[in-house]
Length: 584
Image 1 (cartoon, rainbow, N blue to C red):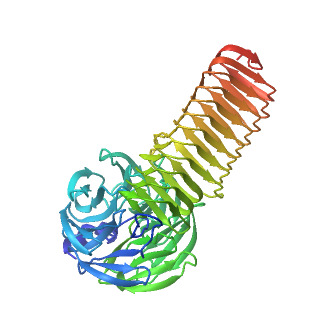
Image 2: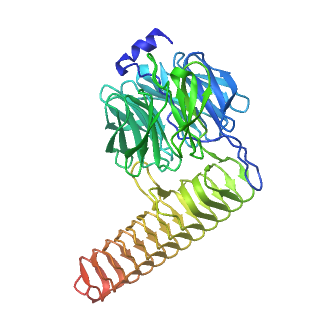
Image 3: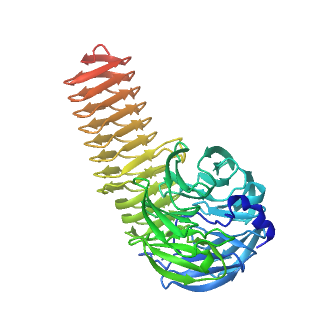
């Protein structure tokens, strides 16, 4: 370690050794037909003092390879397809590219001065590296392994995490003003600067992209940042001088390392501390503790024990240390490949995602059906030739996805996850029925953005108990929103057939939709707000037992209101008005 490095960051209480901020994953072997087969997960651990990376086979919890890299390796991230690990070398100002098939360095890339944090976009095309000593982030194009952009950010950038849809990078370490810089990856410009706690260092984003958790080194807290508004929604006291942050694949727990030789466990449902786990040798007189990562099945947490030259393994079921794995000198960074999955090319046959899997389909074609009964699923820029059926787990169906058959999401239990269907084309029927988890389906300009969807057939949103948002979508057939007990928001959609809002016991909002057929608002027992819709046919507001509002709608045929307990309205245009709406 150079004297310059130790002196440069003394203002952080010598907290300059923090590395990757990735959720965990796994290396994978995927068959090209039939059923996929998963290889054992491998952890990549940077050893700062002797310039190596240890490769741990998580199945046997032994080191299977030691790879020489640059000087002062501090952080590591693995590409989504598991083929390459990008290792940040603090003292060299370089990034070593390791081919995981051979565990050898295949490229060395010069970046900025004292690079520290590293993260890779979900599509594997770009690597973001924080340069502490020059207040920038280097963006590496993985196709050429060259720096494609250099982004000025705050003072002494430290950690970086990327949203699951790849749209934004969250950069911490702006220690002079205690802020987080948000980079839009499409333009590589800073689009927001957010004040958090004192000395923000570690950062991780939840698997559904809704929150970032930021470790504030100088005030012993974790800030919870809502990515939709880029505001802090909670501040959680944790251990002394927290650094590393990792989130379980199901998004329910956050693990935070601290210099007091503890790992704090935060329950995301309540944003409260649920456990504190003593872990020896996290701290060292000159160095911060190592990083932290979680296995793809969510069963184990890997923590770099910097002072002990080892990696500790924590069971997420018991929050007890189950193993200690010796590595080389001063381990600092730990990373797994973010997903098991299919990356590029064609998978012939059917796929099933089950409990314990963290599965991605990126830039690929699946010729058969896709079934999810548990675990976590992300689909990006891919085509599913058959049907997609989801009955368990959490999911994100992201932009560029085409489903040639039907998309059926049914019987998901109650939970805190918010699932998303964004920028997706469904050529058959889309059914979201009898679910207890929230759903965003369609367009949003918030952070991270969710582009609009297109469904050629019918969309059925029925018997759900959690909030549902259908925004900005195009529906070729009928849109049925029926018997939901959770709140429903139906806004800015283009519907070719009828829109039926019927028998809902949760509050409903229908605004600014363009409807080719009739709009039927019937037999609802909670408040409904029907505003500024354009209806080619009739608008029928009937038999609702809670307050109904009907304002500024444009109706091509008849506006008919009858048997409503309470109804108000005005500013509507129609060829004919009948019943309670005759004066509206």
